[in-house]
Amino acid sequence: MKKILCAAALLCALPITAQREATVTLHPEEAKNVISRHIYGQFAEHLGTCIYGGLWVGEESSIPNTNGYRNDVLGALKELSIPNLRWPGGCFADEYHWMDGIGPRENRPRMVNNNWGGTVEDNSFGTHEFLNLCELLGCEPYVSMNVGSGSVEETAKWVEYMTAKDGPMAKLRKENGREEPWKVKYIGVGNESWGCGGNMRPEYYADLYRRYQTYCRDYNGNRLFKIASGASDYDYNWTEVLMRNAAGHMRGLSLHYYTVLTWSGSKGSALNFNEDDYYWCLGKCLGIEPVLKKHMEIMDRYDSRKRVGLMVDEWGTWWDEEPGTVRGHLFQQNTMRDAFVAALSFNVFHKYTDRIQMCNIAQIANVLQSMILTQGDKMVLTPTYYVFKMYKPHQDATFIPMDLECDEMQVKNERYRPGRSDEEPTRTLPMLSATASKNADGAIHISLANVDLKQKQEVTINLADIKGKKVTGEILTSKHIGDHNSFEKPDVVNLAEFKGAKITKDGLKVTLPAMSIVTLTIND
Ligand code: AHR
Image (cartoon, rainbow, N blue to C red; front, top):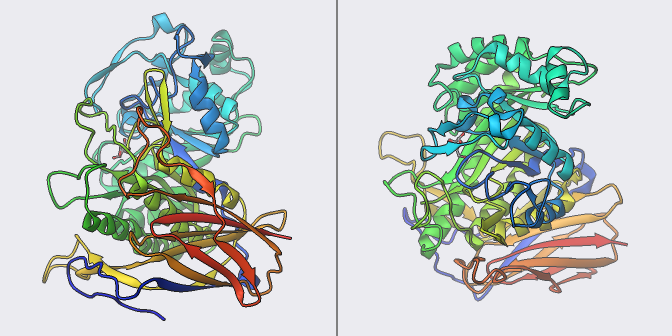
């Protein structure tokens, strides 16, 4: 029942049926790969109001806080069971000198945040504030080291400061109020070293990576998981050179892929967009799958045992900054469209968890595709937040492969250049996206996204030998694709109970409303 609705070069969304129908066939007998919870990682950069105002207000603030961290934000983040948090950047990381961010706050030097609007950074949020936050959230810290403008010595000492029990750096840490070392597993050695992290060539960076990582030591049983700065999107040569020259010295290689409009000066508005923009955006989001495959093919050639993880440590939507906000602070609103990007991205990541060991959405609060927006003492949860919440059961669950048959449409591929590109003029956008997993208790979770803005879909799910008797569900939907939560109306988009699924003798029958994301739970 696979139908290509329209093969025009430009978007064509004309319906030809009153409703869509789709079939999903689960293959529980092939389930073997675990979806690492680290696929649900977060990223907090010293950028705009992500840290200052978003996570941290300081102990003296009138905004209710615990040791300086906002209580409302802490509560919301705890609900997501976030597995890891990347910090302090991004581009900021390669200008950050960690020693400026320790000791009494009144003595900490100030610096200019050159990457992000020239804002003056007072270093009041530093290593202690970050690692203590990770402890409060129960997540693993992922610390990004300064290779671009830092030194090997500075990097080595930072690792010692955070993780050694004894020695000069441990003594300094203790003087600053922290007796026991923290547990730090993930370190990034540079960020976007091809760009804001030093404009390096891959050959040069590969050598520098080898040198820097040598002096990042494992203290008292701590085992560092070292991640090399990886490629941007389609830069396959970067992956090739890094794998060829440094794979033996790394546990992870990163990749950055944003769902971003690159063919015009503007990236487009987060709020004001039309149906064509929406469908194009989902096509661009799914464009990550062939990109991942190409990077993974290269990695396979050098590392057939899949020892080195592909770490998609920046992903998400990138729109124009909201009018009236500070330039360079990357504050954008977040609609149902962003929620679909999150759901579709997870559905892709889950398929490749034999190689993809971590992903970090950019970013956690007030920057790009955020979970949370804050303004003064107000906080709103975004549609993207709710996708992370409804996908929580997939964390550390076993991925169940599936076949999916559904209607498709063709959307514009902005990378196509007549006569110059190996890209096709259009991308195929399936109208249904899905993923499934089984958790340690035996419960099955199936997430489904009906991307069609106008038509509902009847989905038949062949459960194979899965014998569940009871199905429950949660749905994220709204009236309009541009719907979002604002400080004035914080509850326009929210999760609701879903009752459109029933187990029959012919499988699980689901009626998905137009423009909806659903997670079903099946158990005995
Ligand atoms: O997430 C915003 C920025 O995007 C990061 O600082 C950088 O790594 C990337 O270019």
